[in-house]
Every structure is written in structure tokens, then in C-alpha cells.
Length: 303
Image (cartoon, rainbow, N blue to C red; front, side, top):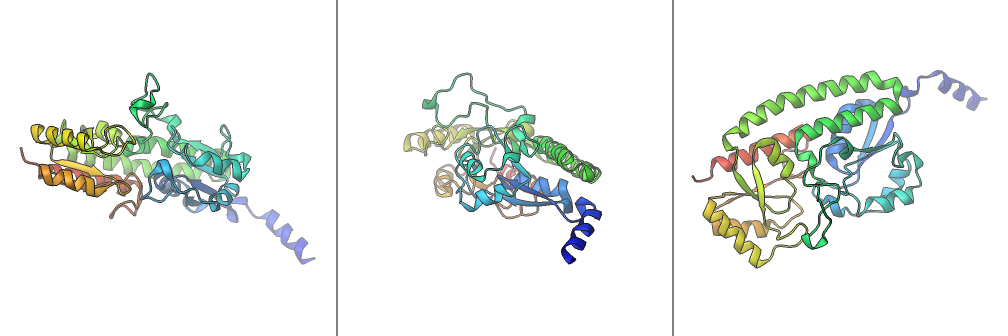
């Protein structure tokens, strides 16, 4: 009798009052934005650590269970997670996360990707057929991803659509306001060339007028070689390039060695909230830290 009464009581309650969308994000920037849009209507977990290479996330068996229980999966797409996500999805046996289903959000589909190769030649290193997948370093692409996430949440949980849209408006307004501030901060350095370890920062460069086109890797995904490092040092000295940026999962020691020989400054950067100090608050805090850290390093650069 008590069980029947409980079931009747649950039937009278609005769905959103006792159940949240269970959201799984592949990496932390999507998890951060999902929380901003979903508010208290979603429960969000993230698979990749913010200090982990997104191409090579440690695919734990427990991730299959998380995916099995998920209502929504948010991924970058563009082959960023192709080395580890498909087997987890196969093992999860969750048809709600199939490509084409409302619960599968692939943020790259809404973004104009850069560096789309005309031919696939593996001798050129780790290149991606769809284009460069590190697009979330441009905050305008973060804006696009937020809209994609909101649209999916509204479709799956229509009863909470007004809340999701209101949260999207607040997030977008805050992001747009910060973008004006960030562009003003970076304007004095327009056209400056910087060194990166891996080709992960082209979108950041496009947005803020930098040229992150000199790499410690000889080719994408190929470890630095003495010959290439010698070439990089020579170019840095000739062109007075004074900033090297390096992600937490790459060799800072290599960057420091180059910096010692060229007088450059090494700047710790991350693509994901929580990857470096000061970015734990979320996606907007991440971009804010990146802009200000790189700007400070460029200000110290000798003419």
C-alpha cells in the first residue's frame, strides 16, 4: 500500500522537481558551460582531466558506466576524442548517445574549423581530416558551443527550456562583455609572433591577432628534435620572439631550455578550466587568465 501511495505521489509531481539531466562532457570546458546553462536542472561529470592531453585521455572502465547512465554527451568532435571515446560509447550501450540523437552534442558541428587539410598525408604528423580540433580557445566558439548545448537541453527537457534560455542569455552577455575587455587588452600586440609546443592555439591567435605559428614539435604530435629546436631558437633570435606557451601535459623542461637560450618567457597555458592556477572558476575565467598571462609576457618582451 505504501508503495502504491508513493508512486501516485511521484506521478503528481513535475518531472523537473525530482530528476535532473545527467550530462557527461568529454573535457572540462564543455562541463563548465553545461553547468552554466543547466544550472540546478543538470548533473555534470567530466571524463578528461584538465591537465590531460585530450587526444589521449585515460579511458577508465568506469567511464562506460557514466555514459550508460547519461542523458547527454557533450564532445568537441573533429577527431579530438577519436582515440578513446568510441570504445567507451560502444561499451556503454546507450542509444541515447548515438550520433544524430538529441543527447549527442558535437560542438564542432557549429564551428567554422580552421586548417582543414586538402589532402590527408600522415607524413605531415598528427593532422585531422575535419580541421584543427582545438577551437574552444576562441571565446566566440565558446559562445557557439553554449548555444548548441542550450538547444539540446531545451529539446530533451522542454519543461525547463525557459530556464536554459535565460541562463544562456546571462552567460552570453557576460562572455560578450569580457570579449570587449580581452580584445582591448591584446590590441597592442596585434601581429606578434609567439612560440607554442603543439599546434593548439591557432583559434586563440585568430581571435586576438597573434601568430602562434612557430612550434617546438617539428610536426604535430612528433616530439621535438635537436634540429627543429635549433631552428626555432634561430628564428626566435632573428625575429625577437620572446614568448613560449606550453600546456600542462607537454614538456615544460623543453620549453625552459629554449627560453634560456633565447631570453624568452615561458607561459603556462591550458585549454581546459582547472588546467592551470586561476582557471578553476570556469570557461570565462580560463580565457581571462590566458589573455592576461600572455599579455603580461608580451609586455616584458624586448623590442
